[in-house]
Image: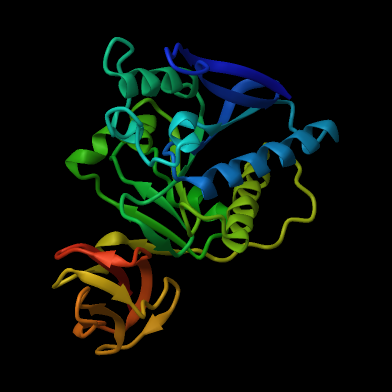
Length: 311
């Protein structure tokens, strides 16, 4: 295992800011795995750390293929994680909205540039991502179809996750890591592992197993005793209906991601914050499965509460 600091930035108040990479095997830059990019991505950093430990053992056992190099970057934003803040602590900007970065720009642009300089030459890239809204997801692999040919659904199915989702990029997607990886000729995958700011061992293990299945299926390493994956269903994200809050208030009785619902079923309630009365019942507009569910107890009007995969 090779440990290297791929980006350093001086700080006037505390220790220097550093991004570390853990590299296994020797040869061409084959696979990069990027963990927590935001300060609340505890699940993502936990998964990355577990992968570092597993790959270290595989390398010690001589199971990494010849000519293969796998690098894991467990955390891109340790400063924000230290103070439990989602975005960059000083100006609240999001590193994952700054790619490919600019080494003479604002702080988060420089961080993005430093990371991208290291990872842009890898043939394959996996980002342990989180959604822009707080909530729980069905674990899945997400592909952004940039039209470059670097969002291969058949490769996405190698993870053995229940779902592989595809989407056409919106304008704001052009500054994401996944999008820019593809523009620079990397097969890119975003892996959503259920939760964000809490560690959920079952979905974390599912993400670890899925990543190792991809590594094994691609011939990058021999990974013994892997559980068999699922035959992934391909879901166009346009198939998912978005449900927004009609009122602000306290969100209660929320049905979590992964549950099947029927049209008209109450899937959450919005409670008056002063009077304790039910302002409205949130009902499923169709039969389907809850793909995303908000997990914060306060909601505002027009906040996204659910995404439902229609049947």
